Length: 538
Image (cartoon, rainbow, N blue to C red; front, side, top):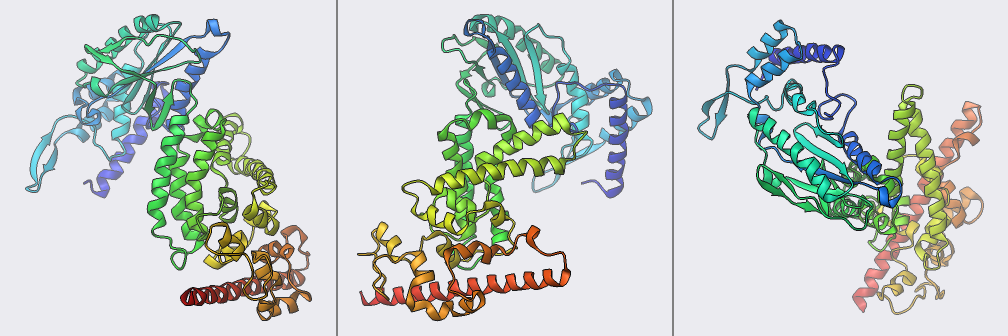
């Protein structure tokens, strides 16, 4: 562990080193790790761009793009200090700065095991330090700047290096790539690093239907050519459809959602805001590097549905809803932009930031793209509610037709019973009959043939007293069309300029919302109690 003075010195050394490298143009364009303004997205984009370039044009003129991902054993811990020192001198780092960095690396010890045995450290860049990654990049850039044959390029993110080759056939790709792999292997050996051939793999990215896999070797070992490889956390498949990646990401997101769901019971537990925060873990896993794969990956309904299923698990826990609620309704109630639309939005934001970043603020770009996503979401919501089997969705859409207004509502948490009322999935005999939990759909209080959410909340005479306060406020019985106004309040652009009048309207809206929520809680609680009592007698 370093003390505060040592950490401050590290920062100063890093600042001076970066200033020198930037001012003298001593950085490799092939390194995407530990670089300001660069990320895994950019490295993956570079690989995908090479594949798309090879696949362009007429079928008979398309090339194969072969990506070889090389695994380097224990890279950061084995980089030799003399080689790091030599790399600094080759980049004309001032001698006084070079001497300080050399001194910074010397006389290090590592405490090992329970006995805390001290062992001298003689190589490697300090992991966990702010200076270590910069030293690694300086050391590694000699490899990345190595001259390669036309059609071959190296792309690195930290120690992960990919050798990319484009050629017409598998045999010619092998002739092109095997010498490049030998060059990389020799450089690694000369600089104290070791490639793990058993963990290295390759994939052919192409639109061709028929082709032969190239025969690739590194250090005498054959490199397997697979239909899918994992590169920087993204599954690259031959056709660049990203179906395998989305399936894997969706499965991991679902597993996380189920694990986190144990912290979010339907009754009690965290507030909706905290549930949404916990649920953001799902989106993080689901949408990792989405700007790189959104355009191609979400073309198919299969991939979109995979993502929707994963997100739905989190949305249901956020709104405390029954697991029978649809993905469309649960995403609206939880205010979660559907994952596929969010992936597209992030891709558009990235593109606009690259094109307009110097002219338009990031917040303006994000706001504009979110408006586009919300509009697409609204169109999808309208279509979903119009489906022939959309019983629950149709009811939720009737109550909350305007997504933008629902998202902009004042902060509130949906309770277990409010979600039942808004989704029509709950203590209603018409719903229970659909899932064979009731023998008929009749209302047990007034014998109406359909005991639906609408009948229970707005029509059944049994609950007139519970509706009385809201009836007095509205000066008429409440109706389904009032729900969005009651929960969301007045639109901001409809409020008067006069502060007194504005304040009065806002306070009245708070009262209306509170009374509507109280009405729903009273009705649903009483109905649940009556149902439990009925089940005891049965």
